[in-house]
Image 1: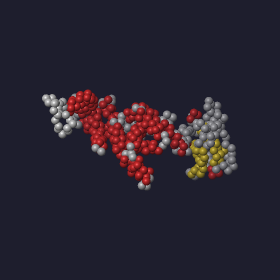
Image 2: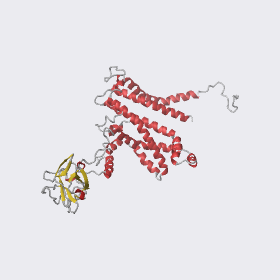
Image 3: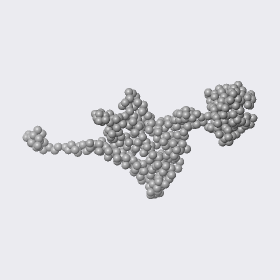
Length: 449
């Protein structure tokens, strides 16, 4: 058998009378065989639903009458759907940018702390929780009652540190008491007071259970020369038996009650009642009328209405950041680990401070990773549903509405209209496509490097 030399002397020639099988053809057949099941599933689970949604969006509510573009017109004329579009725009602009920024900050800072792994674990841990569970958690966090909601408990604590609440809403004097209404919710003494005398300011209308825990049994004030002293107390004995205008043993002082001395319409002196209700005013109060300002009787500060119509969307975005900042941190930290440290050291040697190194070297080198995180989160927030549906109460759900939630409400609500629901689905698809194209273009550019 002879061997033919065709460009490579070491490769033997094909035997005479035999035909070689095409390797390329074999690979194509094998590729089709392996891809066919996946293509069938892709068509059944992705292509067909998209095609049917597009078809259904041109029909009316019943699905029998051709509606043309009416369903798409409804999207841009219905107030609830327009609110959903507006909120989606807020989500797309705010949530991915803030989550990426937080991830970048966490990733950079964890390189400078001893317990970096533990910190990353804590920040990333919310990713292990489902959206449904996170929604339930934050529904409790944003509860209006400070005794139940963590956010308001913290907020009220901070507020009361700088502006303590009086805590006596509904308190008022009886006709037999030496006080009368002073206008605007305040109460004033019926007669002017004199230095060296004592004044009694009894009030009722405060439930004993709501009294400050630090309040002590009321004590009659001791007269002081040149000063006005007195006692402000709750003139009510639990179980009955007490006498009006008399400080009975079981009655407690109105701790923190503000007492003002007013002359000629001006406040000349002011004092706060101690735990036993006693207070002391300087000589300037001589001849003045004592006033209990309306601020004493306002409702105690109850925090912020996080889930009200004005703050519900920022509050839900906050819960989203709690979950996804860890995701951004892990990806950015991986990119940060791949940066050559020589570049950072060279910038420091050239005189750059840490902020300049971060802004001029670290961030530009991390630009591809930041782009991946940003685009991924943008696609994610376009279909946000679970958090909004769970966290927003019924009274604020219209104000927190997003397209994915409106799609659910239009398709499966009490007044379902599958035509409008299908049109919203197509709108969501059209909004996602540009982001996907940007991501594909970026990936191709990375592959060519």
